[in-house]
Image 1 (cartoon, rainbow, N blue to C red):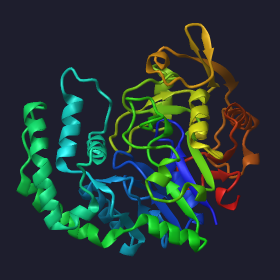
Image 2 (image 1 turned 30 degrees about the vertical axis):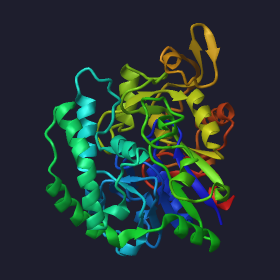
Image 3 (image 1 turned 90 degrees about the vertical axis):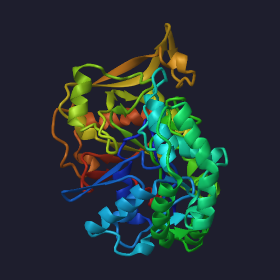
Image 4 (image 1 turned 90 degrees about the horizontal axis):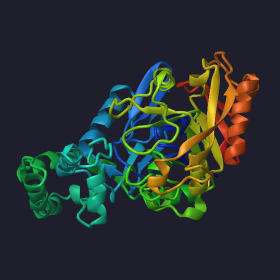
Length: 431
């Protein structure tokens, strides 16, 4: 038995969906523990691409329990559309395969409207949100003004809460954000219909996972976004609204921390970032555009072009520490195959001083300049490599350098989007 947490080790979009899909082969249950439909996990099975936003990536495997923990915020409309899309493709033939915790908080229409209006308000600092209502939903959760799934499936309770909370939201929309107010009855009619559909998936995540553990089953915890977007440990305020580091897996599911065996961090062989915020190794030049095109770096949720840059070992060391990583999965190594030379940022320079620890002071981080170590490229196609020994020596040198700088072993290498384009050096479920 093993319980493994998967987290993004950069600013998100690292390829977590594919790695979760691979590791699901060894798991009995796959659990999503934070975030919402602001994250898109892209999976490629054969030649078919599937993009998931809320449902755990393990749903493409028949017979695996897929669980949405209490730490997730759920847009019912998106959730139901995702189920329908999966069923059209022949997946999720058994509704009992998908369980959603009764304590998840529900994204309401006013959350989305407020999110978009704030981001577009003249003179306001842009964070770069997806406009999906994630932040405002977490605000209400912490402010004890949230609506949970257990409320939604009870029409009387749900109506009471909407009646209580909507006047304040409409006041904000009309008087500060200059938006049209929402109509109470329209919300009730739409969301009561959602509640009837979601009721058949409701469950107790904590109790279910404990039962799995006691029965000796393997559990895989699937994180969204990346460690550097964590609400506490990321580049605040340019972060998401949830705990994206490994500790969030226990908070977001009710699973005890002493039962976690492995934490695997997913990292691209270079770096990308979506939205605003500091990015020390960003390439605003032809090379940056070349990485963007070669890596198809466009958001799975928004379609926005991602910012691109060289591999940042300073930032990755931060992720190794805050997550307690036991292994690294390096994705998109193939994207670098045509380059003459490749760089790794090993430290930052700040006003003439060398910095090896990731600074949390945003004013300092924004002034940091990368200090690079340069490597010769391998200049050969590696997409058909199936074993580590088949890699060119230059690829091995690159991966060894990443291990050396981060003090964390590489346990998986990905050379393409398909399942069969994956080299496992160590399976975390096998110790």
